[in-house]
Length: 391
Image (cartoon, rainbow, N blue to C red):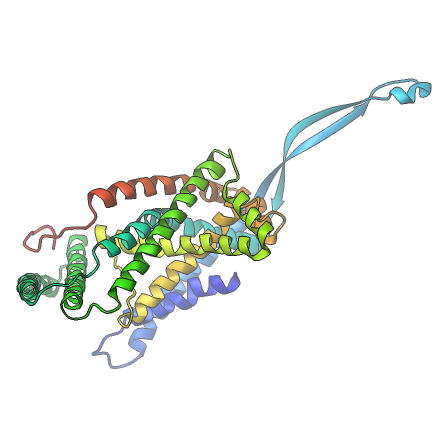
């Protein structure tokens, strides 16, 4: 966990800032190193100060337990056979100061929940829908005349985007840097990328269809598997975590272990890694459709280093949260393990942090429900290049 914290708050932030500061016209590498060091040191100091101050002030876990008190009834020494004990029970709380390590892991998990409940909720819905849509909208063979007609349409769209890009360059050179302007620039980049992808799909449809059917079938299979996993996760959160009416997936893992000891572990890992995949998918989906931050897509043979670093940071931040969430959700299956003790016994009962770790799973359900409506009603974000309000 110390390595995860080091990568999350030192190494990866430095790498991101280093590559973001890269300029083709720079005269020295220190033009990249200096701002990267400054931002990294500031980020690390904020985390350390917050961690130490919270640990020293509220680093206490309130562990509830049942207190039993018994009193023997009064009787004569000759009647010891009739001795009866009167037993009373009451609820009590044991306050335990946790170690620095436990609080650090718990705080990192709380930070990750801020991203996990939003992006994870979107990803649980977007993952299966997008893969099934990829199969539905797979490249299909077209004639040469259709290819030529589509190329003309793409040229017209490209010309519009070129004019939009020139206008944005002029606004940038004039010193415009408002939130509205940055939103326009981000939308322009995403529309350009979408047009490039559409052209690549068109070329495949016209020239080379070899292997595309197998790729499309693979997307369909992933979409179906993702749909089953998403439904299972949502049902488990409702039935086990919220209502506590059935252990649900816990029983499935235990039954799989009964058949073969490794099956339950593999299923546990599958459900955990699927959540991380959903986080990355949700981040990309939210950024592409709402244009509220820079999206770093990862594509085969077309991925920049800052994209690798950004997605690595996102996975690192949410990985601790996923481990904590799985430990709480599968507490019956993972009973009497170190991770269960760490997160279920201590982290989920820390003052302040416990509310984040326990209750943010309910907004995750709400985000998933809203995402389903959003993706069904507005599957794609439309941008009007001629609008003054949006590009």
